[in-house]
Length: 506
Image (cartoon, rainbow, N blue to C red; front, side):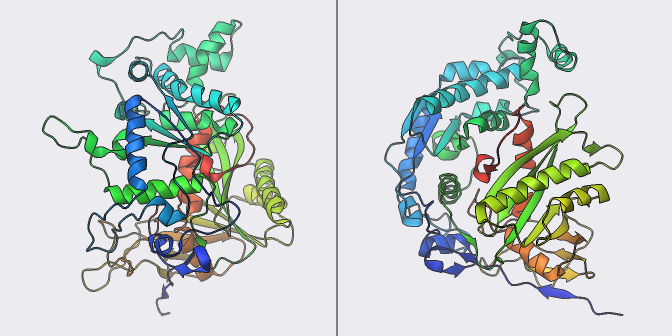
């Protein structure tokens, strides 16, 4: 009987300013600051749009994050005080944003409560989209990113399954109901007013996704945030209790400010030991209920470079989803087209194709799909297909009260193993979770590669989520945002889009 092949993989290091290397993003940013380079902003160029209350909340928060915010609990390692934006990122946060656009609170409250939910979301989105679009087209030096501050009611009523209490509903003015609108979209109509009225049914019932999708053509980078997140203490009930339970102020500052710095083209950190010439691609699939002509899903790809930078490619919409096996697969032609976009974009950035190209997916690639990918990759590029999915089929325990350590790997064979990306973290002296941590199943499904090296890569890719400033995630970034990117790609009929940086989608 062969021995159990357990490994403890080393925690991947991150690189920060002055070429310093540490495990924890907060340690590196606090001690050495972010990576330098030409993209480092000297000052944040910010626009803000919201109701009068929302803009006031943003100003209060912006003033707060310019200075020190104490830790919620200085006695635990996973809580850290916030030193101030310029102290962390070596970038000035202006006293006032470049522009402030006020949204009529009464008009917004009325719109989001319209009885026809498609009409409600469309009109609420337009109250933010139209002025941002108008500003971007009129001004020569627009903000590099926008804070879109929404009231709690937009978050509550602006989601797919939200319902407005009957007594609060606003009468609908929609010319066509949902069923009639869908019929017009599918069958067409000779009357232009019918086609125009049916357009609202081509968009997803999600304020967040729809606003981001509609502004992709303007290449607008936006951060949607609730006013109750910025100043939770300002929203209390009759008994003086906060309406929402939020993270502590220092943690919110770390997370939101890291996101803002990244969206303003800054580079917070990168993996320290990524091999040069390597490229990671995460496949994105999303069922598309708004697609016409027999299509049922949209495909896309997220490409991440050795620098940690990401680019999103929108692939074709088509009948990629199979009800029989409940999985997505491309035709050979469309797989080749998507991979050609990836390889061409890499070549444009580096002057040569990648030496190693890893495709990460949640399902195995079929023969037709893999043949398409392979045909688009030059001979000098080694192509490897990796299946990664969370699983609870294997549990690992150790003596004592602490769970298995993050980075533990069980090699079940030469091509398949289990990797614990969640678990006890020595640097934090805790396990940031509630249940027994489950592993990721990692399988080299196509191509040839060393399994332990692939697992080390996956472990590293859990540390480059610039949407927050956390030690690590449970999923690699190639798959972490697959659903979120798919949601944006299918939230609106955006048509052909050029490859856009990852910051436009998160």
